Image (cartoon, rainbow, N blue to C red; front, side):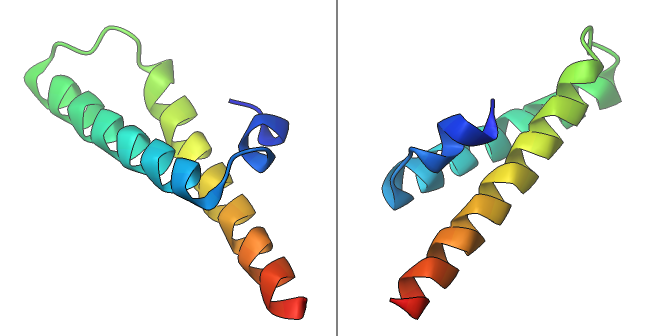
Length: 67
């Protein structure tokens, strides 16, 4: 997921995407614990996407409070 894609999302879409990514992160952790995880890189991608969404959501809130 690119930052430009995240910036075009509304606040509700960001919340939905964040919930989806957190659920995926949980499932990946569970797969790793049971030895079923095949794509280990996906964990890192999901963590970074979650951080990216948090950062852009914070930026949007800061812009809204300025205006």
